Image (cartoon, rainbow, N blue to C red; front, side, top):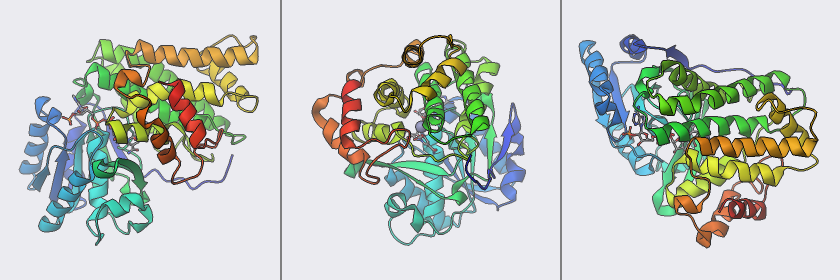
Length: 388
Ligand code: NZQ
Ligand code: ZN
């Protein structure tokens, strides 16, 4: 295990009616809020009215930024920054899924930056100060409610990039699983795949001796496998929704990463798909993951797949190593199929046309992606082709 400095500062208010903590928590940072949300799902589920009432009843003034897109755009970030500057906002409150929270984070980081907000996406080192951020989560997927990153899309340049800063961790997040009862089947499935992918990105790793991180990772993977389909079939199953919600946060808040050398593979490949084709992040990940697993399986990596086969899929440890590895990869693919997620790029409207361009783009910042088995542009292209 490698050295690490532990810091996961976001306060979590988990469970039914925890929204009542909202006013007191906000008041720790001020009384002027930017309320950021997406296309209206929070209105349909009555959450918007609840938030507004709590703010009004507690003399917290608010300004609104609505219509934040899935795969949030830099244009929404710019709008939010303008509202915050004009009104001297103290805290940005995101109510929604990962897209809304990510947009809120970059707004909060962009207020004090003098240039265009896209600069701080391209180069996170330009982030100098961030006003407080808080979230009320409505979709279990990205973990943005408890991490320090954000992913923003620039449609004009076909770029979707991650940025981050320790100060971008929300000060507090309210995680009430009942707010996810209305999440449709396809988003529940995509969210589950996203949570699993965050774990895969750090689990399939060469750092020796990170036993505790690996066992925690396996238990969160098993949680997703156990509850993903249940949440789709029984959307109001509190047990399923609450387990997925906590899995979403734990998968990416740092707990599984501390002590490991990490360098993600499938996410940078997927971000190109979303940037060019605006597809759902979790769907892209579920399509690419089995193809990536097959591609990286070799004599150096097979033992890790055996660990995965035995500890996550409970496969028979007496079998030959490669058989176990391949069976575990098939189980992964079958699981995504059982969630009704498309299995090929063609099914989501992606053909050969831009594969090479996207492969080159995926490695433009670092020459290779991933450190489990480093991938160059040619490798990425091969994986895209295998997923066609
Ligand atoms: O916009 P509204 O009307 O709210 O509808 C949303 C949206 O259409 C809907 N939704 C959310 N909560 C709902 C609901 N519908 C019904 N009931 C509810 N309770 O779901 C749709 C998708 O929402 P979105 O926020 O886009 O989904 P998600 O949470 O999966 O976020 C995806 C974005 O996060 C980025 C992805 O790349 C993508 O841009 N990621 C952020 C990460 C981070 N910050 O750490 C890491 C991830 O790997 C990921 O890259
Ligand atoms: Zn993700």
